[in-house]
Image 1 (cartoon, rainbow, N blue to C red):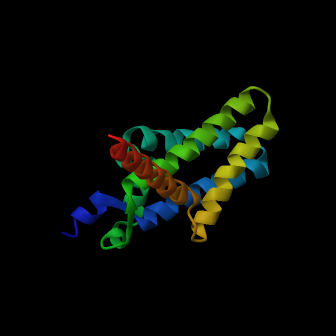
Image 2 (cartoon, rainbow, N blue to C red; image 1 turned 120 degrees about the horizontal axis):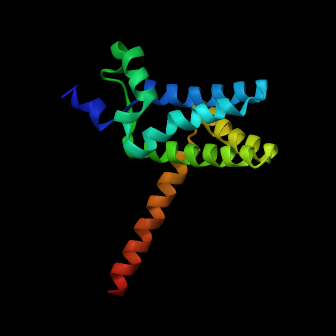
Length: 150
């Protein structure tokens, strides 16, 4: 039973690692004025969004780094983690487009939003999680309303 727990969700040490990598990466990129670091973050997150945890470099790294501590650790929904990574990928992808278009300030703002969300999540409030649950709540309400009309 302990072996199935990590498969059902993402162990919190790995979730924390993901958030820390996003925060540290954007801070380093801004400090050194190197948009290529945000490109690297985008390329790290994108496979996790497209193919899930099996393609996530952060999940693979975290599974090795925290091998002894992830067994029995609290987990986060894999769907929720993928949703959060999708938001980060969209923002970081938008930042790449902005940097390429010469809109440097817009690129840093979009990257900064990722860092801000990751930092707040590390402090205990996950804004992406809030959006995920609100989205699902509204979707459920709409479904119930449509079912009543039928």
